[in-house]
Image (cartoon, rainbow, N blue to C red; front, top):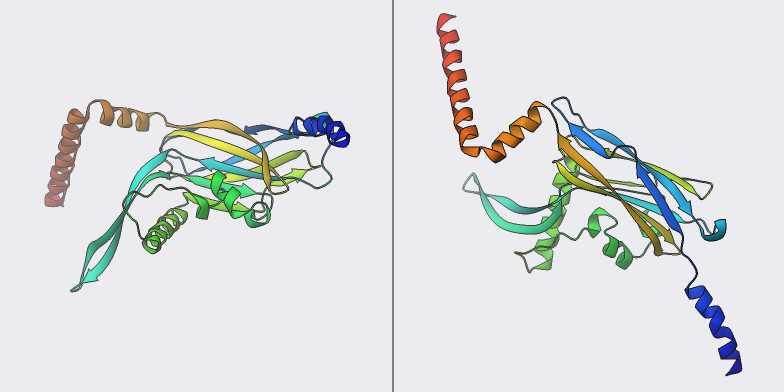
Length: 251
């Protein structure tokens, strides 16, 4: 009993020991979309601050995740019936990220277990999309795989395992592409420090993606004056059609 009482303060000290901290940053916190926007290459970097400056004997791992605003998406599966492609089964996902990019110092399955990866959504196969219209597991997996495949081909879902560089166990850096097809809104750059399969520290930096110039004016007009915007679009289409017809008749 005395031994147990004597060891308890040590156990309390270990439990209360300060955890490492992350000091992250990103090369661009304000991304402006203009007519010539072809995408961006973001640098996520920072430092790991260990208690008393003592680095662990076993090197830690870093995972960075860049996420865009969540969207509600309806996926439709097409089938060929009598030579005609028609909509068949559908699936609705309530909270699919509009953009997702992940980079890690090593492959995710060598850093954390499946449960931890699912909790922090580390990897495309661990995204929590919140399906609302399917109960069949096989169908749900098929639609989710289809969504991930479509967005990956469009450059909106990206995985880059093993690309985070860690220098001297303290400084880290990673590059993630921001597709030209991203939507405007608030994005987050999340950084996770992993030791012995556990996430021991995390930090977030906010990124704003916005339109500028004529693109911003058109977006604002479509939202605030939708009726006038629609009339102007119709008038412009009619005018361009009339002008094209007039030019064709003269030629």
